[in-house]
Image (tube, rainbow, N blue to C red; front, side):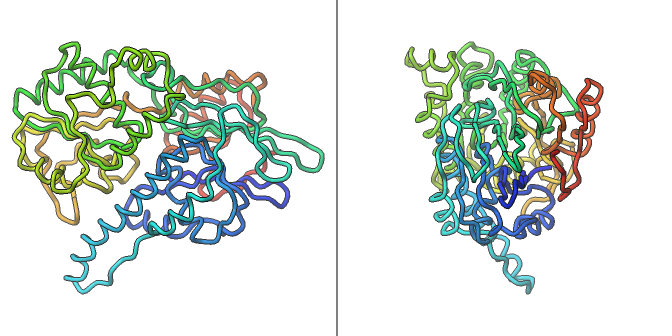
Length: 453
């Protein structure tokens, strides 16, 4: 499931691996995100794998609840988390203003945000930047090494070494593991040692199609939309996914696979995130470095208009097609994409392109599942726009890639724990690992305590 949070207890110390927002049904999300499943004041340090909000988005709640330790992460993660957390606080405020106007009309009490920008201000002062490959002390008896996970800019797998009562064990936490051979970022770094493996399982029940085949399908989908003079709405995470889609559109237009059409990135967060991408070239793969050496700029090419101002965003509603509008959030749970969906899904000439994982009970999942009527801001709208799902643009490793990463460990882990995926995906991946000889494979229940001995 989303909302990654894992407490590692070593002696009297408690280290938290990630602290993410839960994304799902609104009522459940509200409850889970306001009430952390542990006392924040008992956490001594946080190891943050990357900056997606389902991994970092509850850090201000942790700080608000009494956490006073250090948050260790890579420099790129610290920069991205700063803007993502501020955006999360802002989106909460804006969405609640809209919803509370409707609540007041119904005589209902107004809702308060889970956290504010003041809470974010306190949180970012606790970031401690860590270089890839550097061993750092976390708490007495616990050290960690961050290695490139290839998922988003600055993402890391975290190898934790813990000593207790004279014994030492190594816990390897994948965070979100990326894929090999993808553009912009380097491939995930292989890790050779782990006594305990804590692995994500987002795509544990499936494999990705070859990316070249998906590019052809993407190009065909966009060409069909252009012929209809429609708009293509692309709900997208502002960090990682937006930059990847812009990169792919740049390539498709350059080689003539799709017509030259206006492309809009309507997300102030994506604009700021793209700036941070440009500042962290140390994370790029050789192909991206070569493009930059040649003077190309696939993240800000002349065909793309980056929009920050609300009035400019609203003008897109009156824009005649064809056009491509990329907007956050990626799971359609908040942000400007909700307004674009509301204004476009009732028209048959338009289209919605889902380009990544959609958690259960999110609006994005309902759209991907083909529901004919969807609720936005409390009102139902008929879904007449065409919908296409391109999971292959996900930055998550699939079943085979997760298995290959685990099998690269020199001695099989004594215990493997499947986390951060649907129950179906985690159980499926767990069965595969067991079949391949991994011992003590566990799919924990929410809140379950597991001994690592």
